[in-house]
Image (cartoon, rainbow, N blue to C red; front, side, top):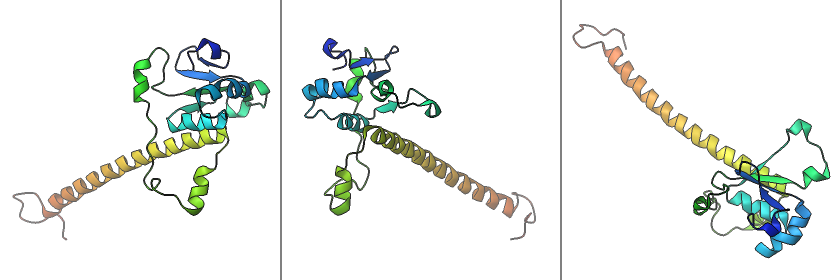
Length: 175
């Protein structure tokens, strides 16, 4: 779709080729999405991108954002394995795995929540936040393991110092 000359005025690579821009979202949805997907809903398209690890790039800092129609209808997305001229990386783009507890049969309120479709930008931000949360959790777990190793090392050191050094007559510390 991105390399198709017929859709070049709706979707194109950025200059460095590390992201792509969707322009005129309304026309893109009507003209392009329906021919490549079972729908022409841009929010669903964004949700699918998020499920495969793509992130929305905000082109303007928050304080400078305006509500101009041109900006509102232009979206930029990136994925570290989706690069212009690198079709060899496409096989490495996988759908995100479900987190523990998300599989199986959904019932009640959880079933309804899973089916509610968020507006594109909110869904994109939520996907980014979930990825950030996952990274922070991994760092936290690594730090926790490091802390446990250091605590064990300190206990061993305390045992050695507390009993005195080999060859000394008395313990340095009274226990």
